[in-house]
Image (cartoon, rainbow, N blue to C red):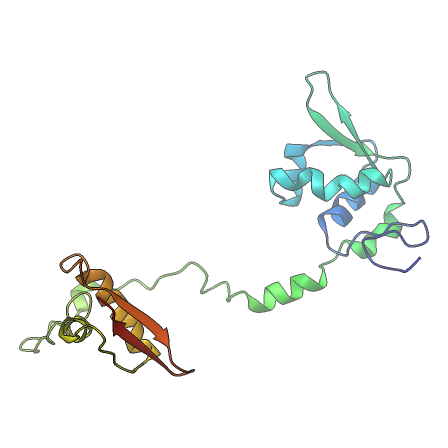
Length: 197
């Protein structure tokens, strides 16, 4: 049988390095007489409550762990008869290769969750700066093009302007419910809206 990590290899099982299964099995190998509830696993190994059984199911199949019920019907996990010694599991407890990638993509801790605080008392107030003319919420230019078109008229536009026409159409159809338009892609760079009604 092929040797894939996390799958049986000639009858032997080996969880993925750094996985919850590897960490839980190592913990039980070090604490064979202990038991953990689902909540204990969540707290100790930072796993989502809904994924506890899924993360530990392979360990239970391999008899590395056993799932028992207490008198109050809560589930506990205990070391199983086939659990290897801690010395065999220790190399699997380190970070997984994926952890290195996640760490590389994570922003530095001094930037995480921080928003610079602006001292409003030191903000400069500018006077006499002309305000740009509003183009309207839906782009007055796009709406005026659509309103000028008669049935059968069409214009060729870059895709970005065609998207603005689509927004403008959604706005003007409330005021002009009888006007209908169709937008078609002409080539990779341009689209063409037609007034159809």
